[in-house]
Image 1 (cartoon, one colour):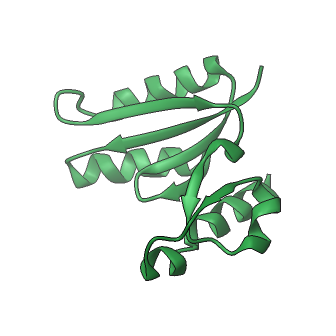
Image 2: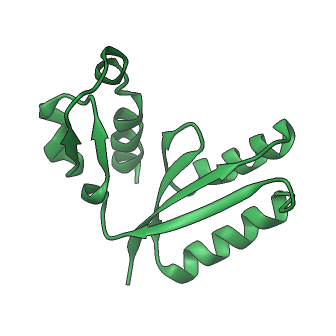
Length: 116
């Protein structure tokens, strides 16, 4: 069964960071600095995590993936209401002026989704 996975990484070395980021950009939608929304089956994401592990130094770097059934399970702050039905996301109240202005990742998710 296909689902969604939230994939995040914390990589110390800039060269490894770029390689991991590049690989993930081809697999999912960039949500935030080191966080991606990736569709696929558990087996596909396990293969992706194995590929990422080969690029990382696991004593220094951290790679994680969490299954979610769909993007609507992600709570966020600061997005305009008209964008919500397009990706099915549920907002939290905007907490800061910066949160209200930071809408870039939703645009990237929508753009990536429409390119598929």
